[in-house]
Length: 298
Image (cartoon, rainbow, N blue to C red; front, side, top):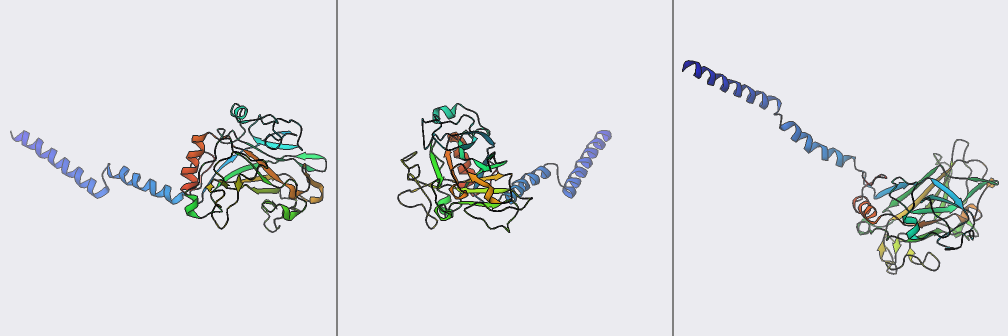
């Protein structure tokens, strides 16, 4: 009996010792709990409050085609440089684009993007940086929270291919990468030797809610006014911002677009995002006002 009492006493002492150590240093279960609580806080602190997701879509090919402006008429257009969907041609439609592959990251973005080809003298120049941002900017925060995904098959043309002067195309601008001292312009700019020529183009972000295209390829879309979509185009959708970086610099007199001077820059967009992928990004990145990467996460 005494020996048994000693064993019990020893066990009690051991338990008390462990309890003391846990109270002094923190129990094994308390460590993970604290870490679990801290992780979301750290992650929340890292979130950038900008309504944005993006796709990086390298150049795929050139062709004198435009399946939005000249559908079913291969060769009818000036030369275009295409990004994203690798099958785009004069006969492309939603069904054909859905069956193709994409150069984009994420490769689930089967959309097609294209612009008039840039020339340095008589030499074609393709951009080495090709980022397509989907943004919530340009409208009030309460409108951002109502932004809806692009409908599948939506087609948009932004810019003015027929501009006769810089003021005819106020949504397109040229600038120099890493050289903010060079003022942006609607026409080509002179970039320093270590710079690159950049093109920025913003697409309209208000949809009429009915048409995937229109006769002039623009009337079904509109730009916001005073942070709100006009009553004629009541559905807010993401603002698509096209940013292209060309490996050229120097005297802008050398440059021209297939459509003409720099102020004729324009862009075409044919939406072929999978509906669930687009919806997730709009919900988690744009509506939530969170900056996301190409994978659709912060």
